[in-house]
Image (cartoon, helix red, strand yellow):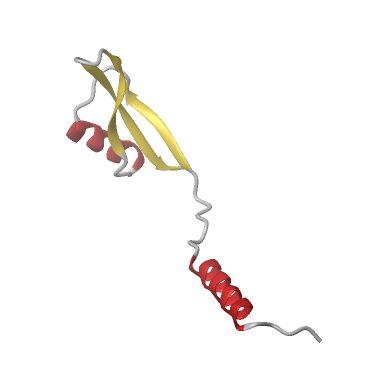
Length: 80
């Protein structure tokens, strides 16, 4: 019969604790849609995203330009 040392029990208990604390995988997929590729005003982007997809995922993301004068696009992230 195999003997287990207290260290082995401690490691096993630690592993089981970590596995039980891991977050559940969310099967819901996230989709993205560019609502305006040329301009972004954050408040307008959030409002358009909510109106179109009932999501609060409207955000302005960089879309090129120059380092001193970047341009932004309105991106909506929502549940598919």
